[in-house]
Length: 187
Ligand code: FES
Ligand code: FES
Image (cartoon, rainbow, N blue to C red; front, side, top):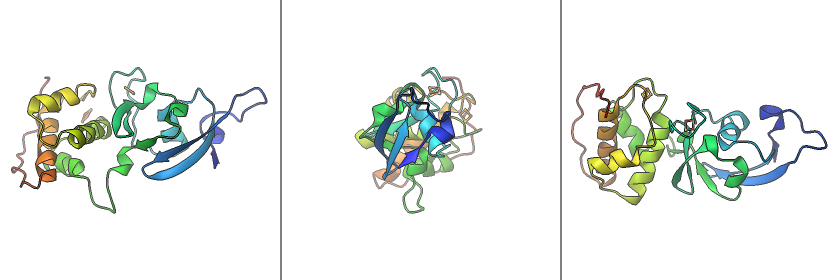
């Protein structure tokens, strides 16, 4: 059991409410004592050191903080950590398995789906959730699934291509060769 107060908040006084929660994070059970007001994004980043979960806006707009809760994308900047009690959380650090990149990660690498990389963890987790429920999405379906994730570098074209590549890989098809287009657009 870990007390997160040392990492993310002052040591509680006698008046500070404390909740003990148990969350599976990337397949590992973590039991932590936290204040009920602690956001999930802060528990992951400051408490558990999983800094692949980014915070861009803090207002549910950008999607940089997206993680999977029981396989569904959620914005961890506007969810309390106590709401994850008893649930499975997947962060970008949990995508790779035994040192092997997830197909979505491979797709972003092969199709140049990132520029600065700030939006990339959230994009990849939203994409992963889409492909888990729809292994053969259309371009429109990919754009809709990623519509809650903003890319400040506006590399949407290659992000969509990356997800199409991952879908083809997961279906056992040989993905199309990537090109070197940087894919900047504003759609
Ligand atoms: Fe959570 Fe932007 S930091 S949506
Ligand atoms: Fe820079 Fe998306 S790659 S914000």
